[in-house]
Length: 571
Image (cartoon, rainbow, N blue to C red; front, side):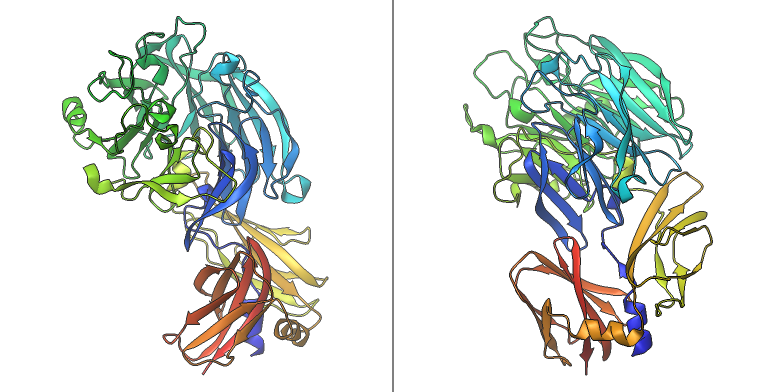
């Protein structure tokens, strides 16, 4: 029993799905969702935004998030130096840039992140594209903005996306300049950001003659493989601006050069509105996870959602494949039925913002053609008291949604009393070098280090694994150092946070907490392998007849905070 206890005390702080960087979303009016192995769950955050936001996480949990002006840390407090980081959107009550922000990790770095921001058209795009640098080693791991509000491109539109360089390491940051046909691609590498861009003039000119409007709204999205870009311009569909329609481009990941493929022609047949001769505007855009489908939405301009099949590569065939997914409404329809921003999620689905709604829509099978993709208008209910604002969602670097296989992971060979050795077994996949942070101010670069803790208590350990392609992955575990293994076992058996009965059990056991809350329960084998997890609020029955006889451990979370662990025996 002693060895079983020693192993189970070394386990993951936050078990997440493989696509970990994009597991936490914050948007709209203090709304949020997060993804884990049990599914997608509504939560709350600190920001209020009309449109675009950004967030970043790793295998250890949330790192930080922003609406393009203020940065909040993992504790949902303003990060040190995190105010006034970019496009303040002073001409509007809250930040209202389509893609207000984008977060990328500096290649090869285990602590440095670049935050790119855009201004809003209500602010005449005056702040343009800017960047800030965040060091996650500062403030005891909560992060700090160490360089802020650096200008890159005046009059950049409300558009920013990113593509992995052909070398598999560097990152292209891509935007479009107002009153031009110019794409700007900035290269970020392990040394830093090259502020001299690759400029490509291609496609339509983005301009607007009406001073009350700035033709700079709408999404610029890269396909997951980085080979295609879609640029949509909703104001360009109206008489008050130069006519500019949605346009598909090819992107050269080696050179940063953009090439126009074709323009989506005007469509007045399906126009929804009271003005004759107007055409359908597009606001939201994204590609399917397998790059074969393109989705376009009208955003807060109308209740339209279309799918196009890109697999033929032929413009006429692509245009002919157009499928209307959203249910049409008679004019005037409730503004609450407008599909807006669209984001690829860690669960392989596409989630869709809805203007002023307490729900997100979802495309269940986005790789399938036509209606088989199964769009559901009100699929995920948000937390009470929150909503999606104008329907904006986080803007992610698509590579982070389905990253290259690099997985940092480790187990503890031994958890012992104070002053004894702790051996770590490295189970990382695809890594070439390692950085261990032992949680007591000491470090190691060995593959399988051995460490001695001189103090008792809970200790958070991090392993940063790096590969030859400059990707970095972090895995966290918590160990418990006590004066003796007997003391540790006593603390577990006498915990009052929850009870298990019967214990021992045969076919099922019941979990009962001492108060109602949002809990997550995890079941571990005696060797520390996660077997099952489930959400509940007060009590839970687990059918476990298929488990072999032996010792197991049950770990309780309240929200994302580890609360307690107990031992359970199956006869």
